[in-house]
Amino acid sequence: MPIRIKDKLSMAHAMCLYNEMEKNMKDTIIIVEGPQGTGKTTVTNYLREKMSATDLYRLSGIKDKTETGKEKIKIKYEKLLDYVENCKDINMIFDRNFFSNEVYARLGYQKYNFADVYENLLNRLDNIDANIYLVILYLKDEAEFENRLKRDKHEYQKFEVQSSIIQQREYLKLADEVEKQAKNIKVIRFNTDNDGLFEQKMEKYFGELFSN
Image (cartoon, rainbow, N blue to C red; front, side):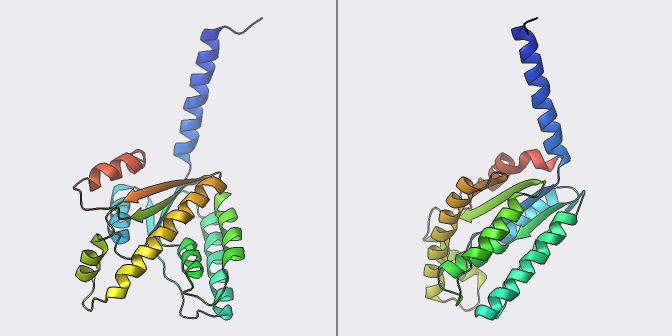
């Protein structure tokens, strides 16, 4: 007996509800990246306050920039993903992750090529059973970097402005790549210019998470 259009619509509606329930039951992983001066601390703190059952991690690189350092950072992030994969019933926010290491390596800040390690880590992250967000912070008005870096540092140095601008462009390029390559990672490009719309933007991108 043919299925009526009304029945098909009911089945489709039920499937949508099921998918939404399944999404809400999953844990959420948010990785916030971007150059210095784009507001990673502000954004991650806001998310932590608004989301229930959420841990916030602030990561940094390591001092060793040589090939030996590559192996150390590889082990660090592999262990981190082991930990993330085994955590259940908790949301996680990361202020930086292995994406920063890839950007720094591309720009020559480290004396090694990180691409092979990065691709393996990205694939592992993409296969974690969670709602995963990669948030790239940037400034539309690149001139604003000068004001922010002056404000954030006691000893302001001109080269840091140009460094942040170059990093920003590489982060945005990386965002495009991840969006094309990953199946389970939602990429958000979040401009943090001083336009008075910060809370509206947070609600737009993450509002559905704030009630969970």
